[in-house]
Amino acid sequence: MSPHVVVVGGGHNGLVAANYLARFGMRVTLLEARPTLGGMAGRLEYLPGYLGAITNSPGSLEGRIIQELELARHGLRFVSPDVTLLQRMGEGLFVGWRDRDRVAAQLETFATGEAKRHRLLVERLDALGAASGLSLWEPPPSLQEALDRMPTAVRDEFRLVVLDGSLNDLLAESLRTDAAKSLMMMLALNGQLVSPDAPGSAMGLLMRPISRASSTEDVLGIGDAPLRGSVGLPVGSMSAIVDALARAAGEHGVQIRTNAPVVRLELAEHGQVTAVVLESGEQITGVDMVVSAVEPSRLATMLPSGALTEAATPEPPEGSAFKIALALDSLPGVAGAPEDVPLETLLSAQFRVAPDPAYITAAVEDGIAGRPSAKPIMWGLIPSLTSEGLAPKGKHLMSINVWHAPYRLGREYWREHGATFFGACLAQLEESFPGLQTRIEDARWFSPHDLEDEFGLTGSNITHGDMLPSQLLDGRPGTDFTRAARSMGIVVGGAGSWPGGYVTGAPGRNAATLVNKMVRSLRLR
Ligand SMILES: Cc1cc2nc3c(=O)[nH]c(=O)nc-3n(C[C@H](O)[C@H](O)[C@H](O)COP(=O)(O)OP(=O)(O)OC[C@H]3O[C@@H](n4cnc5c(N)ncnc54)[C@H](O)[C@@H]3O)c2cc1C
Image 1 (cartoon, rainbow, N blue to C red):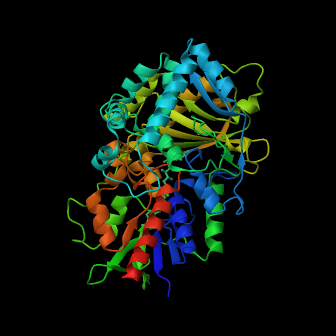
Image 2 (image 1 turned 30 degrees about the vertical axis):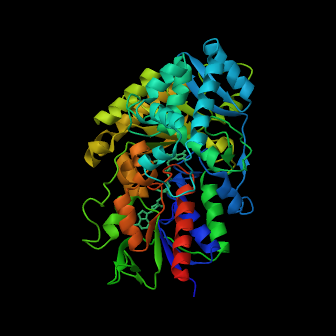
Image 3 (image 1 turned 90 degrees about the vertical axis):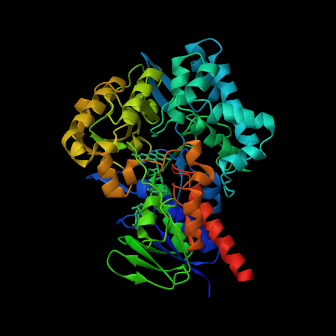
């Protein structure tokens, strides 16, 4: 009989893992704690009639997963607005057109030669990603092994750019203007509690080059587009990705169970996992292997005491995410909007509130120091402009991700001061979108603790652990833990494992391919 694999956690990575496992011929049961699938990417009714997902951007989703799992056949479609990004810059506005020449023209208005410098920086990162020999899809080496494998010149460059050097060093060396630096800072530091002055803080810029170098085919046709969001937006919001994954899994016989929080994994005397116990007390027996697609410290709590040494036990990550959804009776204006571009065209893009490096740095430093940022960084989208049915007719949903609302301040703090922080966010948004506040009919916000309580997002860390070099490769979630779990027949496959967070699907695919290898090698013995 084919092996029975239980996937714990029905976020997008759990669903990706379940799909591949089923295609490898295994019997798969997927257990999700919440009533709905998809974790941070799953469908959410923010307010009556206003639908979306916590996440906005599919810019990290790996094309090969869409292709291999035939997600288009399962209903996943993308819409590609002409404008991909709006970012207020000091007094002006950066409009990220899909057309690369228009982007270059704007960079050039910041300072003569800035478009070329920006292109050279992107090319430098791409070359490093390709030469690093790192792959999203291969079992990750240790950082030292990765360095040892690199030719000397590549190793020196890798050290300079992403180990010893900081993001600010790289940007100071490469670019002249605050505007161009702000664009890159937002890509590098997305949701991380990492100072741009810290060694390793440019690592976020290398993940996409590594992704490009790892994939043989450009199945999404986005070429070497340097900006996130270039892939387009999923029709129906990010939850459309989850819906397609769930349909694909169903077609391949995955048994999907929601409202099924896992509390314990039972091990046999020889230490192998044999059963999964739900909060209801129900036991799922006859389990051959488990893929854990939950944040790693959660998995640790499911294991019998003594199963992990102290050194192997992962610490819960700490983060600073805050979420806002606004129900709007009409569209706001856009500060600094070019006169010849219709408002709807501009507002179809993702937007960022991060007007200059000083603003970004202050917000990050606040987050690191455990202070709620007075002027928070935000990423947002009005998904109802590009997908029908996400808001009542004529109305709109604005979905905003806010960083640097420290979880560390505690549940009580956020209960008491969450509304004030929400107000500070609105004040900043108003500067980018004049008239916004008068158009708000209703609103909902989630503090870092709400995100943990309602979505299982440990410590409100959006990537299940920061994306620093020391926490990537086999350091994610840690070799001792990975080895110990594997010896029990448990493979880690969520954002807390290589290649890390965001909606990529890569950790889920990697976990499934590893399980397949392990099962095959056992059969051969
Ligand atoms: C506000 C916010 C905005 C973001 N925006 C973006 C974005 O626009 N683009 C992007 O790429 N990334 C974004 N991210 C990051 C992204 O959401 C995560 O990195 C990604 O969703 C991780 O996927 P995952 O499947 O590994 O984990 P998750 O999405 O966290 O899913 C884990 C699942 O496990 C379930 N679970 C937990 N415990 C148990 C248990 N005991 N038993 C059973 N199930 C359990 C949870 O309910 C959840 O469904 C955002 C994150 C936040 C917080």
